Image (tube, rainbow, N blue to C red; front, side):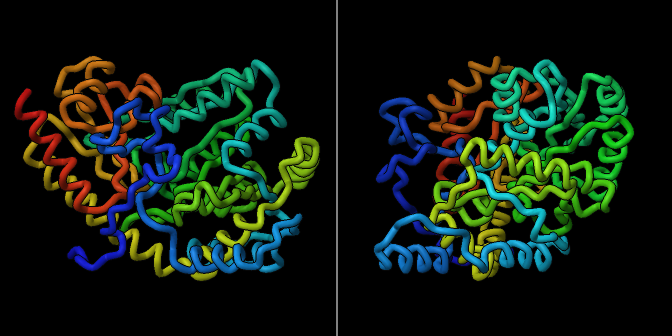
Length: 394
């Protein structure tokens, strides 16, 4: 795999020209210009040209009154899932939402009661913890097992946790953030079978669905079969795939009629079912014309994975957990024998790295850090050299 020197993804764009969360003082602190901002999970690349063109066209129209959902949007979503992931979706099963966190929170509120248990599989996306805490649900931990440099699910422990009648739901991360696993069909079926046996509802966060590497195919949980779909709420969005997190909405696929109707009522009650003209334009363009751009960006990110792997081969103190998907790398720093706060300080002060601390993903993440590699190759190269120098000096 050779890097294209003329790639548009090589362009270095100053994210600090806008209030980007990744480079904002609330995330990095003051005087942060020297830091390699690789924490927040978005890309440092411009959105696909068709998306930019669609937004420009919508802007030039000049009238921004209330709008309905474009007639072509749901067919575009359906076609994307069919063509890209061989998943046939009934349009009546699609509901809109502002973002995936909103879907997760509403699902917990609707289908569990305060004090009920919700299973998570740490190290896992930290907002899962916050949502459950803020909604007064009881977090049930089913930690992943790291074995020979690869994570797997602990199905024996999952069976025990799911069998508790007070456990009502599981938040599945598919593909998994931060460890980069793209769960296989067999793994998903085993999880689904356990959850069906014990009446545990699967709420599947599949925001990274489109970002997988050769040899690893994303399987939508709800595409496993009607029994699995009936016990699932699927959460999807083009936000990660096309780098439009600040200019897109999300959608949920709910096969079960009773749950879908309950979700519709709650969407209406909370008035979260309104439409944003720019989000609609961006999403429609992404799903109808963004495929070639996504293929190119995946190739570029794969090259960045290779670059990280090559650099870390010369740094025995740090291990890369080989990713199967997402643009987020999970790095093992435990050989440095640093406490979590010490590791964060070391990376920031000595290597100029601002990455996501591992313990944010649960205690199982202590000694690790999450690195976002959706950035220009030259920026990544510089950052890796800074890290090597910091380790050498230490």
